[in-house]
Image 1 (cartoon, one colour):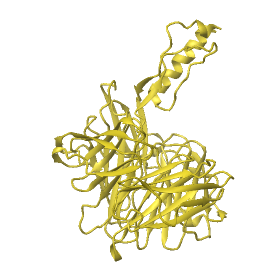
Image 2: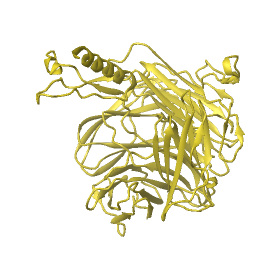
Image 3: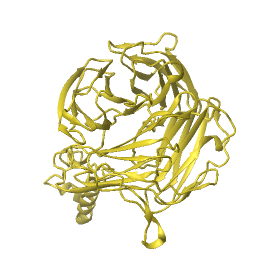
Image 4: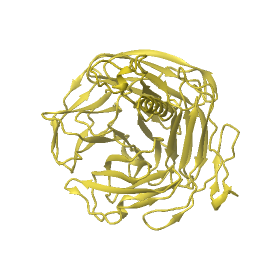
Amino acid sequence: MNRTTLSLIAGVAALAAVTGFATLDAPDTSGADTAKAAARLPVERTGLVCPAPSASDLAETAYTSFTPVTKSAAAKGTAHLTAATEESTDATGKTDDKAGKTDGKDGKTDGKTGKSKEKGGKTAAKPVLAPKAPGTPATGTTSGGTTPAYLGTAEGAYAPGWTLQETTEVAAGTGRGLLGVNCTAPDTEFWFPGASTAADRTDYVHLTNPDDSAAVVDIELYGPDGALQTTVGEGITVPPHASDPILLSTLTAEKQDAVTVHVNVRSGRVGAAVQALDDKLGGDWLAPAGDPAGSLVIPGIPKDAVSVRLVAFAPGNADADLKVQLASSTGLITPAGHETLHVKGKMSASVDLGDVTRGEAGSLVLTPTDDAVPVVAAVRVVRGKGDDQESAFIPATADVGTRASVADNRAKAATLSLTAPTGTAQVKVTSSAGSEGGATASQTYTLKPGTTQDVVPPAPQGLKGTYAITVEHVSGAPVYAARTLLSTDKDTPGFTIQTLPDDRGTVSVPEADENLDVLQR
């Protein structure tokens, strides 16, 4: 029995180091400490999925891969990003074989896809990019509306904190502007408050299956009055290594402007993201919101936002009453007329906050007025004037934890927003070398309690190409962060915002005590 217990601990510890998805607390049957403090070891494998970027022939998409340098990481490794080329059928019944042309800037791939001679006759695609050594971003580009979803895997030295950014510029049409999304790890549940089935919106939920077996998914839609009546939202099958874009308006006849989408995976895993395209306000990606919680932070609302719309949803049956505050550059303030928000159980609640930031850096802080009830939330942000208005989305997110990164930052086009709602904190911000050359640069920032600080990231010396930003928590209270990226194309006004949650580049693995007699009891 002693051997069995020790073997189990060793096996689970090894699994934790490989996947980054498991932690283990050694049993304590005696009331005494039986394990040393957990060690943090780098993960050895990471998987990410990127949704198909756009159906527009005018789309130009850049993919940027970045792995921060991690102590104790493996000396060698591999990383690749390949097309999800399996044919798949969307909710309208149309078959779409998205094997698009790609152009890798790193010179190793032309990205053209062709029929493979492998078993099953599946299409084999060359990688869209070839990641460089940790600490240096790598880029690749695609053009047009046939670019597929991509599946990414990093192992060894490339796995800890691996980040992939998909950035698309669309010159005209519905969803014009700059659309950006961090490629996400596959999971079994996702929440998207802020979607829409209204006539002026064309919203798709993209489901991407990276595994060798089919995934079965349910999609639920919730409006201001509760669950929307849906037709084909249950039991959607996503084939292996395939991606399905599901048009939300095909799932229900109800036209609602504040919809929360719940993606629940019955079998397997998928990556999920919502692409929201507006006839007048451009388009962007709505990334999954953080896990339901009693208190939430939505960081990085641009100081020049002309409209901010908050959507919140309580997944349970209990109602939630939230105190709404803005962490401004000087401290926490309460928006006049919007002091609280009542969210009924299983119903989406929304409120228009207008130009709540009023020219200052800001982040929304939502806290319970009484008993904490788990909620999810996101905001839609609008910038610009007249016909040049564009929109983007910011979901509530986790704090940066130990470390977080965001890729595809461009000279004079990126702003980093940092907020510490509950206390003083200090963070170190590092700008990586450029994808085509340059040297790293770092700077440390101290954040006052309840404030948001917008900073221009330290410029890499001799920057060529794009660079990555890494935020490391140094001390103090939790810090939340978001990056705003502006379009560098003068003919394509637009912006996109990505949050920076912890990169989960390391995992806790407890060290067994030298005296293991307790495990024999």
